[in-house]
Image (cartoon, rainbow, N blue to C red):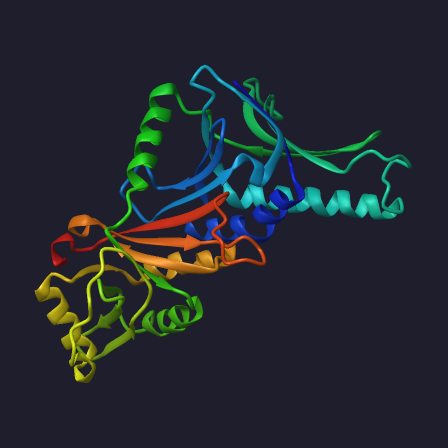
Length: 327
């Protein structure tokens, strides 16, 4: 079982400045899943607790000179502490950058490239007689190297990798209706207020492009509505004359018509999913899975300077519902 690659400048920026800060908000421990073509960071795919988050990168988005081999169809997976990985990455960047600067931008008085290698190794930790697996980051120059070792779990067995792949395949199913929210800041401002009101959030999504959020207690009800958003998938014409109705009335009628679905999710989970803004997505799509199985949030990234989707990176979350029958 072998893995070795060099992080590109773009890969370092994506992980350090965007995705590791966002993914760490989803949960400290996740699966890092390596295949021939993709790298995945996966939260909660093998248990039903908390938010499932799936970050996917094509190899070329992060690495060059990518080498992987295993007896499991060249697939390797293990759990890793994201905060330790991010700390190691930042440390090795700062140390090597400082070292390079002290030598006038050329750390060895030579044209040796400033490259950051990442690989799987086994090492004998201090005071231990048993070798342990590590993900090692190494900034290697001509006469020097800066090394950071990140402890990882024992790599998953063949059966566990197959189970993880099956869960990943299932998590790729899209809701029949998705609506696009271009301004994440509005949602964040609303959720900031919601956190102090209650723990349960009603989320309804209509085929007309309406997103309705409401949190209630015995004393207070707080709601927000986003109307006429872009719809992908199944859609319907909004009934005429409903503009004079309240948001709650419109939602109730849409549910009765079968043109909307509603689920209840944890306010805490919804707030946590919004922390994915740290990955700097350009917009987000919301949808409810069939039979109200979960609330799906898909974050979209554009190729810089365009409005074309960057298919090399993707991120989406699946929030567990509190009451599947509410749809």
